[in-house]
Image (cartoon, rainbow, N blue to C red; front, side, top):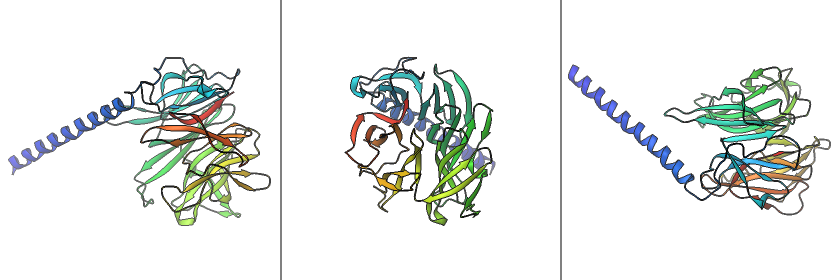
Length: 339
């Protein structure tokens, strides 16, 4: 019996070694494929996050080449004039007011992901470990408030096996809320706390306290737009079928994705919600957009669309439903604007 146990233990160790070796090989292979093109070579300090000057579009470079996965920028006024690529790598990112929120992983057999708040020179100001895989990132207009969403596996109340966890960090007071699930939620004046609730897609108002976000609950009808009060730790349900809201610079409208089909290949369409009248306007883009878009200005919206397994392009379109989508930057994901 003892010999059998020893043989079994040796076999398990060998199989584990093989699995670990293959995992490392697969990661290196995929990285080599992504970085094997002729894209722009990254240079430290290439991306300028400092406010002022002409507007720059900040994004994750997804063009095949040495800059894949790194932070990049192009001028908003002439996006085809050539990109600059930094050595800073981010899986998700957002820039505002000389600050960068970078959701990044540390490679190894076990990859840990972090939300990193950095200044305009990429100096690390705060690092917070994420509970799962990065999904969404957002800063307030002045860079004070940071929000992120991560996919989390293993929650018992999710039929799909994963859920989301959204946190908010106030950099002025060094206050961290790891999960919005601790907030009180009200709907039509009554408590609304379904056990399968998830939150994602935060967008801040200029008061650095109020925010919009998505609440998801399959047991209670799908998705809801909520307005949150960070100081009071409360949220109020405003509307159904709203995901990934993004507030316009003038604070009057939200662009969001709305479920319009049960077809898993094209479930969403972009809409704009007027907050004063609650009137919805469908945008000209008819392809399904799974992104939290951003506003280039009060009239134009930018968003990402996939072109392959790891590549994306950034598109733009008018916010009033007119015109047609236009390709802005190829090989780019997750746009934000530094003005």
